Image 1 (cartoon, rainbow, N blue to C red):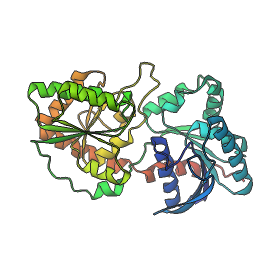
Image 2 (cartoon, rainbow, N blue to C red):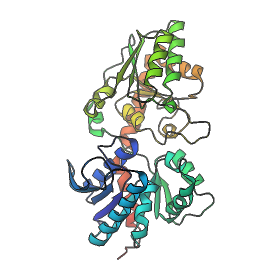
Image 3 (cartoon, rainbow, N blue to C red):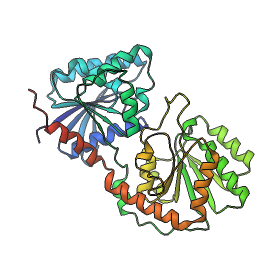
Image 4 (spheres, one colour):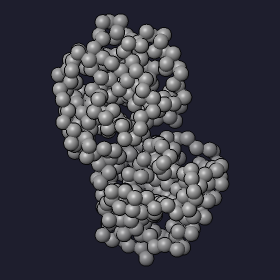
Length: 381
């Protein structure tokens, strides 16, 4: 192994909860498993300074710069990046967002530089940061995007600039690979099919459209379902009111926040994972990958997802799930009707989707693709 240590600059890190935060932790742990020790610079609530994080893969150090206004955090990240580069030997750098990359670029000193693009972060930024963002994208030796939609977003963020490095699509891994592989899924009970949405309750997740579609089916007499909405967010009260207005109280449960340790059980209790996400009218709010969707499929749920965003990379319509127009209630209802009335179709999509995700989505593969690229590069000194 030519590369023994990686400096990771990340926007935030657990215990902060979020998709990018989870990505950073999974990748750091997988580097450690691959024999590459990560040194992580990040920001999260709590005591500033060095923290040792212990994982099954082994322990490594995380430098917390603390919290505060964004400009202050950024300055602290710059100081921390300079200090680590002066005092510690690292073989390459991995920034898990372009904003985190800005703090380390001045101190790169010819080390190989990897940058991850998830999607939304290259579509939403202050105008003053447009040129720095382009500079980070252009400077990277390797830009990895988590889906083809994310790749399109990253390319658009160049605004005509020509990157010097290699750009690759590199899918995320699964959160619970071992648990999913070990799970023996029972046959679906066609009399009560369990539909689950697990997401932040925000506009893009389209819970409103799910409820309207299910009300339509209920009115048709298709009632062999129970719908569980898991998660919290700004639309919680609105969703609760819509359930009452539609008279769906007997068919829908809102279970709120799900603890990390309870998430695998949530997926085990899911027959249809309903996530007909939408993109905003401006196109600046999209699902870059959809880790919860992939995780649910890995446990054997048949997924119904929106056509906007990255999930269609791994949910092939009619083969590994169903892809719908999230803005069309009838389209969502048609997809659900087909699964509720044909358990054999549900089982087939469940089986093929699960097999593909278990065989193709893993953090080991994600990191191996990065390391394979680096092994082909001239070694800097």
